[in-house]
Length: 213
Image (cartoon, rainbow, N blue to C red):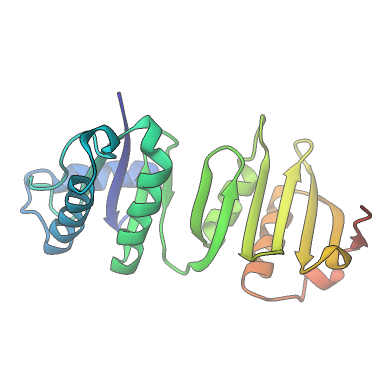
């Protein structure tokens, strides 16, 4: 059984249903040049490894699928493949669709940061749309999200109930680590996005307390 990632051009779909509809329109279309280039890179990198370390379940590309690309990988290679997919797709203006999670991750308007999602691992950027979606959908057993700009500079949240969140930010050492209780997923997502784009207007109004160690 394989884990799938699907690539499609940024902006052609706004929801998973629209992504599925777009993929249907690409069946039988000549493979786009950009897709062929990404597929070749993936196949070449996979071919450099011993067969036991293969990160592809089968060679990718080379089929009439227009501007879409299907990538299947073993489950134990999910993290590696995801990182590689974003490395190749984002500079080319391609979104990543994860049909297992039903997540459409589009780079439009993105800011490069390291995002750690408690339930799904790491991602290389954040957008306003993703901030809203990810915070809203946080759930047990790991209902947290971390957005890191550099070592010791990050903002993070933990969902303690349907409406209650702990929000923290750290701006260097432990003496610059602050915490607050915030109500509402939408508010938390807005504050995380503000921090990501370096807008302190609303963040400065939060009743922060220095975290005591």
